[in-house]
Length: 311
Image (cartoon, rainbow, N blue to C red; front, side, top):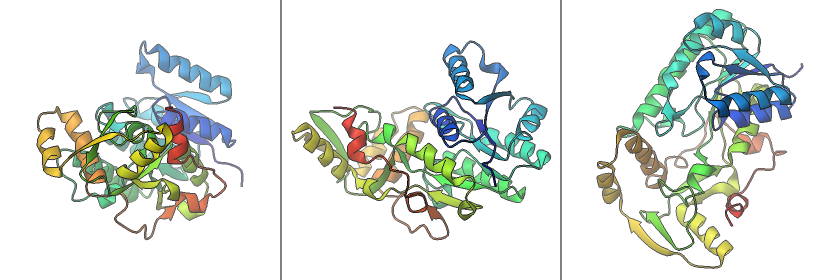
């Protein structure tokens, strides 16, 4: 069997551009959906042109034009959607229902990977408001996929390293301090941090793998399963200095959320579940698959290697 032809929706986004790069690197015929309503966003236009120079094919298509989606989907074997579900950027998860309709009508897609890439929404049934909207919407999309008989792979990539490691797991920070750190609670619940380029590469490796068909792929690089306190300790060792530490209890954290706007509250509830409850590591994978075990040939970026770039 040859490599699947791939359509990437949301290819100019934070993760999407990395998926395009990984798809091309692995030799897939790669199509990138190009929205006519991109307007005067010159950065996105230039990114699309750079994809074209690297060998990707640009395909016109819009969520506002059903036939354009059907036509785009008919060109490929695999569809990957990477539209944003992060409220501080934009939240368009339910737009994927239009993509599901197009895939059903086209009838040729061998696999669909919807925009997930975070915590497994199937395990977040007890998530608090307002952050649970992210998981609820993803489950609505899953239901449509499965009821439509569409073959799928769901990717649970846990914590994007840029968002979490860069700020030493402190909400609202993306650069590590050399002076002070705020620990969330005691800083001991474990989370899982994954380099965004590694997320893309693991995802692309999975699309033609029968072992990941109709399953959830969990990306859990073993060296990157660490607590906030352990991340801070790695950084302290790297800079040769102990940071001043303060902490915020779960009650204080939840209380401070009420002063924030809606989008920030959504993000903070996710931090709460990850850093206070340990929601990413408090379960066994079960019927899913783990990426670093399936693809040991991928040398993933460790937490220490990721933090090195901030020195």
